[in-house]
Structure formats: C-alpha cells, structure tokens
Length: 268
Image (cartoon, rainbow, N blue to C red; front, side):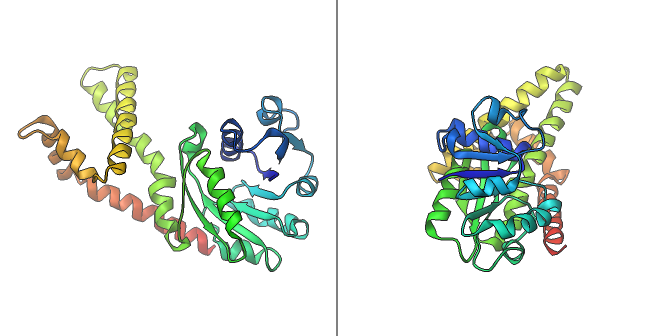
C-alpha cells in the first residue's frame, strides 16, 4: 500500500521515519508534502518522495495520514474532500472525533482516527485506533500494523479516547515533570543536576520495563510496589509522605483536567 503524509512536523516525521526504519513500508511507497522542499530527512536520508502539493500526493497514494494540528484539520479536509475518492484517510488530530472528520468529507469516506503519543519519536508510542463506520477490516489491520511499527497500538472505542488521551497522550509530560521533581530533590540532597536527572531517568526506564514484564505475567502495579517496600524501610516511608502530600489525588486530578480539556476541544 502506498502511504501519503500531509503534515510533517515532529509527530508526522516520527511515524513516517519509524515505519521506514521498522521495514513496515518501503521508501518507494511513502510520499509526503511539507513546507520545506528538499530539506526533510525523509527525502534526504530515506529516499521517500516529497511532492509539491496535496493534489499530487493524493494521485499517488492508497491511504493518506493527516498529521496537522487540530486547528488546521478543517482546511486540510476541505482541500482533500474532492480528491480523496475511495482512499483511506487516517487522522491523528487530537480532540477531533470521527463524526466531525466524516462530516467534512463525502459520504462513504473510509476514515480511521488514531491517538498516538510523543514517544513515537523513539519508537515507543502508545496509540489508540478507532475506525469509522465505512472503514473495512483491512484498513484497521493496516493502521494497527503502522502504529505498532512505532510502538504499541490497540483498538479502542471512541468514547474512551478522552481517558486514553490523558493516560497515554498527556502523561508523558507528567512523567517528565516527575523526573524533573526527583532531580530537584536529588540536587537538594547533594547530587549534581546531571547525576540526578540521569539517575531518575534510568529509574523510570527500568521501572517501565518492570511494569511491562509484570503485565505480561498478570501482575498488578501494586504488587511491584509491595515488592520494593520493605517493612519499616525508606521506600514505604517515602510513599506515606507522598500520600500525605496528596500524590495519588493529584494524579487523578491531572487526568480529570486533561479529559475535561479534551472534551471541550471535541465540542469546539
């Protein structure tokens, strides 16, 4: 299948380059439009084809992935509407529901909505996929395989996209904030900033791998917490101090706040 990208910012570039490096798609089958002719690494390093405009792109591809900011999605859909035909359209625009996407296209359009996250930049995205009413099974399989090539993808009901956006889409920023807070505490305790950030980052990476391994064995995260928390030890003392400061409640409020904003965006 020949795949086209409209929008080649950080996320679009991450998905395209990741799919190429994973061998999911050949450079000869990947096309894109971008505002900087001849300068995009997809063309210079991977050999993908950069085209001058979206009309040329849609003449060559079987599926098109729209990777523009949500505020630009309406104008892009208006441009591609008369050109799309029976081609598959994939959108990663946050907060833009399938009903809105399909409503801006001709009747019968095959549309799939995806919510990836910034970790696609390192081939470790967590993505949710939801197919529109006219998408066929082969469309879903293609999109799931595409996003599995840059991390892990699951099929999810669109009604749960708000919760997923908070947990997987927004939470990387919260994880970065957590590391920064740990680093500040480390510096206060005498570590250099570099030592503190490196230590906290490796801790988070290793902990994520532990969680992933535990998930494959049916372990709950709480079981891993218990495994680290020796009776009367420093870990349980820190956990209790965190709960006194409202750590878990703050995380819940962060998720709720992100979900509220996502719902607001979907209505605008």
